[in-house]
Amino acid sequence: MSEDFARGGGYIDVAGALRSRAAAPDSDPASVRLLTRPLQALIDRASERGGGTLVFGPGTWRTGALVLRDDVGLRLEHGARLVASADPADFPVRAQRWEGRTVPVHAPLIGAEGARRISVTGPGLVDGSGESWWTAFREGTLDFPRPRLVAFQDCRDVLLEGFTAVDSPSWTVNPVRCERVEIRGIRIENPPDSPNTDGIDPDSCRDVRISGCSISAGDDCIAVKSGTEDEEPRLRPASELIVITGCVFEAGHGGVVLGSEMSGGIRDVVVSACAFRGTDRGIRVKTRRGRGGSVEGAVFSDLVMRDVPVPVAVNCYYGCGAWGDPVVADKGRRLPDSGTPGVSRLRFAALQARGARYCAAFLYGLPEAPLDALSFSDCDFEIDPDWTEAGQPEMGDGLPDLGRAGFFARNVRDLELRSVRIRGHRGPEFDLGDPEPT
Image 1 (cartoon, one colour):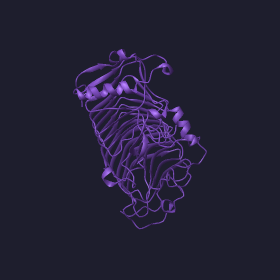
Image 2 (spheres, helix red, strand yellow):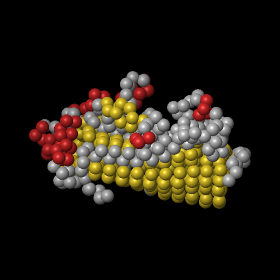
Image 3 (cartoon, helix red, strand yellow):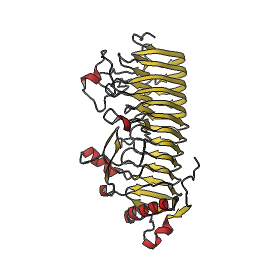
Image 4 (cartoon, one colour):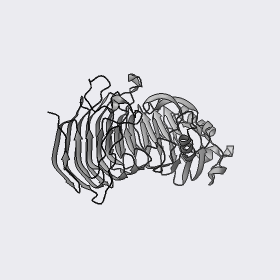
């Protein structure tokens, strides 16, 4: 995909197009006229005429929810700030995929449904004005889920490049059931304590390439998803052919995550040449009974981690949304059914981690569906020798507290460890329980 594939009819100078409406930008967000209607009119007109790229020059442009159409792109020049309105009324409620199922949710700042050849490019900034939404969420005063910053549904040929995104109300970038998505060189900055402000969440998408991005978030930095058991099967195809490379992750619950919404399946994922600093976990796979689906065929290679308490976590007892559920929490063997998830064929190679705290790796499968065909090669884990506290390596009922542990594995079949070094740990280097027979 070319970076200007959405030009269509050429570049459209937004300031010039809006000058007759006396709606030019200003440097003070509080004094800027709300531009939702004129901007949407420009988008619609550009698409009707064969497409074009709306170019935002320096200044602050305040708007509510915008919807991109076929062959239309937004380009934010240096010094341009696209700022979300603080009024919830400017983000109408629509039925869209949210956390794995279709529900009424506030529309995203930049959205699209069923569009082709759309783009958002930088080097300017997109500001979600998230503080008021976070406060309302914490106080429990919201009637519907918060808007995402950029969310496309059922789209094809999507380019996101070069812009900075800050203070998203919830998830920052969320393509759903999209194909051929390119995300490169964007920077995402959400406060570490901002609730559920994931960085990039491809959901039931195919052919996604994420490269050269820098992400600091209040939840997972990148989370690959594919819907939940509550969504109709036809609406939750697998996420597949996902490539993540050359990215930097700082602050977040997980650096690169598969799940927990994975009922449609996740397969053929490559994560390479990435750096992690201060995320709660590095590579994280999370699911539980009842979710169904499978994670299979993922390769994680040439990764460097610093001060990541749990470098690798694979958890089939994920508790969020099911805390206290006796079926989810049961550590005994149950009869497999359509809701039994599977995790297989995960390969970790050339991983270096320094400053781990709880353990080098936490691998916990189900007795009735053990983790299958996991391999670690040329990996070097160093546990922080000064760390003294035990804590939860993953989220789930009845999981053990660990502190400076090595490899912790339960219900794993066909685990290959080759040239794996662990330093600074207490207790056994490899606590594998009773390995499942191959």
